[in-house]
Image (tube, rainbow, N blue to C red; front, side, top):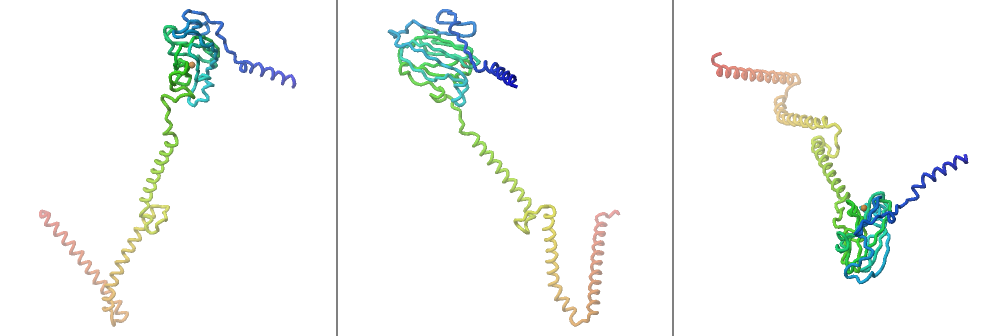
Length: 319
Ligand SMILES: [Cu+2]
């Protein structure tokens, strides 16, 4: 049991050892000088614009000798929302004519640069001082800063690395202003606009949904209107029977009204006719009235039939 635990512990140590110890490849001793301040090694490390001894025009002497270590990597961008890469420092400041050595430490497993622009081109090819290495690795270079107050752009020129945050400014003297889109220092050139964000979109969608619901409710109310004539507020479950009931009601009430009117007109006449008659006489009279009525009806129908048949003969004389 003890042996088993021990072996697990030893195994864990050997597995985690390579993760714990992040080794930076030091390219400083591997570089080969290609002339004109251009140094390269076989592992992908590169220094361009190296200048350890030539004074820029306007500098009588080296004012200061400075050494800085700049770290670069994804983890330095974590404090800047929306950014992916960054240097650990976004702003540098030096006296004019400073001899500056930069130790660039790339902590990512990809390629990064510390590239400075705007230097005098007679001294620095393309006006650049440039450190570049695939990480994790360290590479160092030296330059002598020009005189005057000027702000220089420092960035990583690998595609989209500057846009994703690997951007800084180096001020010589007082500098000549600030550069845009430097994480934590200056505002974005193109600021993402979150004004019409999810809350507004959600609100608009909710309003549209509520309107649609209201329309449906109105339509339902319209279709149910005939059913709820008798008792407003009660919504019938079965619209079929509900639609029939008012029809029946109106029919019955119509018949009732006609019957009532007839009764009111006929009753006094009948009362006058039957005045002073015995029960048997009244019954006989009613039968007589019915008989007369039926005969009249038959005569009427017979006359109608004759009328139609005579018209038919007139229309079709040949037959
Ligand atoms: Cu980069």
